[in-house]
Image (tube, rainbow, N blue to C red; front, side, top):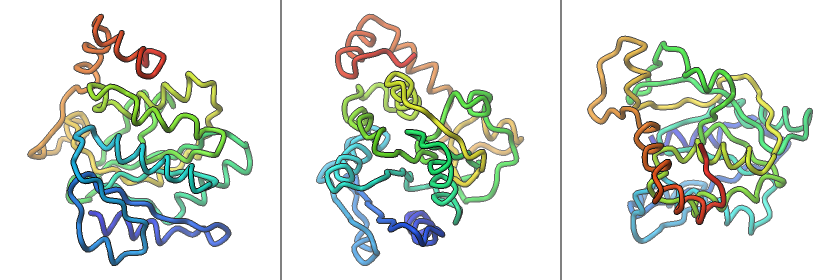
Length: 230
């Protein structure tokens, strides 16, 4: 999976720009990565926060090294060859702070799940983390990966989307499904009538919202990120 993700970055048809791949190992480094064309950073311990800590640290590194854009790619996902070029094209056309792609759904083995996307995604009320391209005007949002309470990590992409809205940033969409997403969510398999994978996830949004709407959850969230991502 790591090699497929990395290869899809190398295969981007973006001759007009330089694309660097930053990979952050969250406590479980794969030694093969050291021979790849990446900036490989190894965290000594795993944080168990759905990738928020490595995602946040990788983002801060990109900001510090003065990159013009940040795109994300979870380790089990991969890009189509025109993913970044289509996002950059929309940015040129709109100057939006955040540009977004659509995604295709896949089983753990990579085969396609023939099922519709969730309604909130079709209505552009939700964007998966790996579908984002952030321009410099959106870099102020990246620290939220590190600030959000660990209890919110199962819905971290929804929290990030709320942060974009909270900061009044402008979004633009390619409308193209250029991100391949390996799903572990029960709903995607149920819609397609497929057998469930071994580690299937149920209604994580409902479970997390129950904590978020509690007095303790609301106070801690507001204290750490400054708003409630409901």
